[in-house]
Image (tube, rainbow over all chains, first blue to last red; front, top):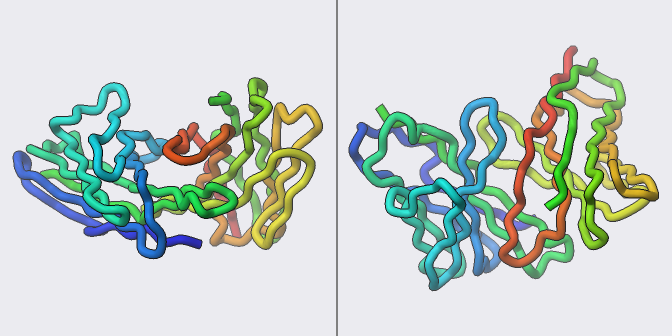
Length: 117
Length: 111
């Protein structure tokens, strides 16, 4: 199946700093990517839909000025957590759909563990 | 999107068959039933998808009754490595429509 990668896999930062997470589709082009957040023992929560060449669509309750999403190419989307605080500590997972796949399968990256001190 | 209900957790011994049932009473005509597996600190992984009757692949089987108001994921002869959270998703997902996850079922396989 198609592969989605994320970088970094783990990041620790100080409160008030910004962190950028990259999401790449390695062997297919993705006009749309999705960003999820997952807290311990909880399910994945959709944060935003990232569209190549246009603004992202954010879910209700997700601050677009805090979670900046840039989808500059068909294989790369980035999520920047600005002025991070301890409550932003979470597991961030990106995903993309290979629209050429007959199952319309949505592939997920391995996730990025963010810890804000 | 159809609301889904599945058990919060299940325990099983190694070598047993595990069946996880998902209820989705308000499934729409064009909705598919998809199951994903998630190991700790990893992204979810597609297991199986079906529309009606039975689907089988190298990992699992999916049983869907005629009314499609429920479905059962069957894992044959589980091993410790099958310990994970299993999510049932019901909808017609394509293009820029993202998967929306419910709470999932936490399966613990015991030696």
